Amino acid sequence: MIKREEFQRRRRRLMTEAGEHALILVPAAPEHLRNGDSHYPYRQDSDFLYLTGLSEPEAVLAMAPGRAGGEQILFCRPRDPERERWDGPRLGLEGAVEQLGVDDAFPIADLDDILPGLMEGCARVYHPVGKDPAFDQRVMDWRKRLREQRRGEKGPGEIVSLEYLLHEQRLVKSREEIRCMQRAARISAQAIVRAMQQCRPGMNESEIMAELLHEYQRNGCPPAYQPIVAGGSNALVLHYISNNQALADGDLLLIDAGCEFDGYAADISRTFPVNGRFTAEQKAAYEVVLSAQAAAIDQVRIGRPFEAYHEAAVRRLTEGLVELGLLAGGVDGLIESEAYRRFYMHKTGHWLGLDVHDVGDYRIDEQSRVLEKNMVVTVEPGLYIGSDDDIPAGFRNIGIRIEDDIRVTDGEPENLTAGVPREVADIEGLMAG
Ligand SMILES: [Mn+2]
Image 1 (cartoon, rainbow, N blue to C red):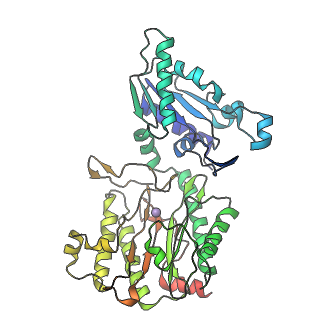
Image 2: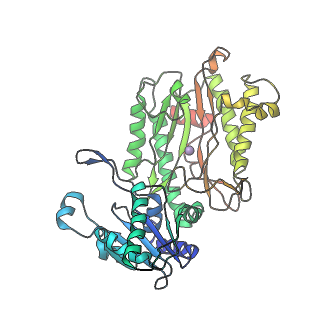
Image 3: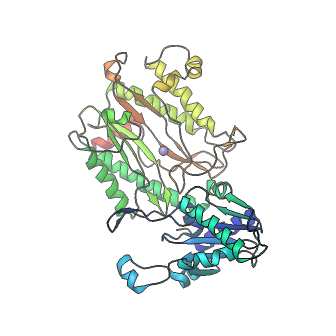
């Protein structure tokens, strides 16, 4: 659990960086109606969650670094016994001040009355520009109202996207954030171990998905994204989420799934034989991906460019494709011509944090950004071999991805998701048990 003091530190740091002539506005995620009175599961906006820890909708955090030494105000839903009887408890105004440590709290219904006054004397407004068109419009309306109300007041001249300041901060994880990510990783790893243990030919992909969700939910964790449970050729569809086909004897099963703990995501992929034993061709292709992953993880170190681990994976995968007889020619030339892309068409990983594809720039001034301590990335090479005529029969419809969550440390890269086996012998041993 992230403590109140850490949320306060994050808010203070953001205010310092925005400067005293700024006003910072961060809205909670809106609720989305599915139909009738039924909503989609609520997930708080990650920026708002990062700064408050509050999971309620209908709230706006306003921070004015130049007022009273840095004023933090939360607009939120007031206590309402009648509504709480239907929708559950609310934090309320007093709760916001006591539990979140903001300076003051007002009912969300008063936002339009109070906000123009907060803009007075501010040179710029930071908010998540473009994320929610309705909120963009409200910011413009508040500015307009301020001009109408106060003669001679021009209102903030600049509307600035909050992303750059806040997302730089989110990119490097604190000790407590890493603890949350380790927890999410451990539960997500257990879930895939469970799936490996339960898997049998003839089961449906949906039954394997149920094993994953069982493990998440009994630990109080929602999935971090829609799981991929893809048997056989379904693994060749990179974003396959139907998860409703029977698992055939002799096929591989690719799972890409993770849960979130306190908002922090894990993201794991494993590929294993439905019947518990790799064929010779499956094993050969699998070993290529595994060695590419090892080469890539070795690049996840302080001072290495973000791109380096992708390049290491591409080189090893290309060498392996030549060894398997699926590509012919010199490795340098095959990389240069991107011939490998027939079998490997995605990048080798991404930032991981509150969002599964977490925020933060990958390139700065057109250069690959350099890795820093306590950044967390996924390392997920794969091979996707279709069923064209020129593919030997034993290699057809093999889709493999191996993905772990790796933290940049002072020393060796830390694999947060090492709790689920990757080696062929370990997977076969687990599934035989
Ligand atoms: Mn991933």
